[in-house]
Image (cartoon, rainbow, N blue to C red; front, top):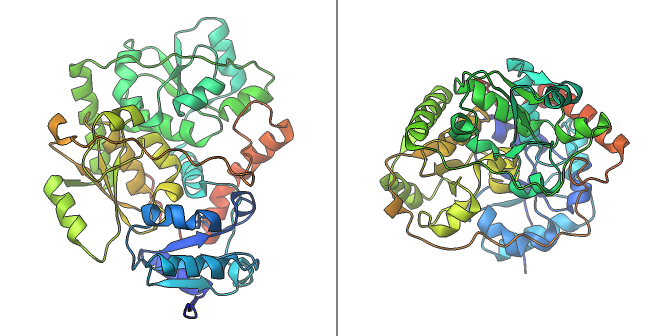
Length: 415
């Protein structure tokens, strides 16, 4: 027989966030309805995924967990399931989503909202250089001295890409820029499907002091499509290996950015110390590619490619206020990723002095979860989305900075 669950009010949840204390605010509805309205730092964990995913996503059993729905009765069932899994600090959000709204809490649409809102804040404060789809096409048409780098996952790039572009997932941009673009006069254009990864990718190059002129493709492949321009499909252009001298130079640049952002430095001994703590949640993450992870990784580390980690903090690290420990072997991807997480308010450490022999564990990343029939249809994925949905998505992104100000809990600080 389960015990009654205590409640947390909207005000108490907000104060926990403002105090930078650990909390997992879980929306246990299906993703499609979650994407219609939810608090900024809510993580989506549908009821039918709680048993399978909770222990991986919320590793500490005495984490403060606050569960809510919109009155469907899912929250009580999810709380009982979490309690059965051994979680000891499970609460219900007082009044559920409606209670949050009635208390004046801000709600956000779409998914991966903390990262997308942060990207818009970066653009608003740093005025990230951008070129329109028409301007980029004109440069390509006249074969100007320009290179387009696609900062999405490789599978997304293969689905649709800007003609001539090369796949360079976001965390690798600083690592690979010099090898791909040896002429300092070449203009580098960074794109994604919408806005966030192109803003973060472009600003990564700017922050690292890349001497080339750099710009984001405004509104990514959405902007390209809305301009009536044709995308490529099935491309396979990928970055080539980076010479050691260029890797070392990129590592110095990335470390300098991470240091400016307040990233902490650690070694393997610190990982052991962190794991012995009982009052802190820690996410140990390998930010290299899934293939590199599978070939060998640090014991107990999970695969979280850097560009996607910055894009999907709510998925990978649903416990807001937790500690993140990042590892790579190039000295670049972890530091660049960490620099962004630190600006997003995370306590983040990068492991130094790692050797190839330290990456001794071999295992595959978890298999992707089969698509749910209730999955939210993202306006920036695929090639058959209505133009109205694409434009509405862009309009929504433009309003995120104002929403952050109204919400007031984000704690973001832009370099």
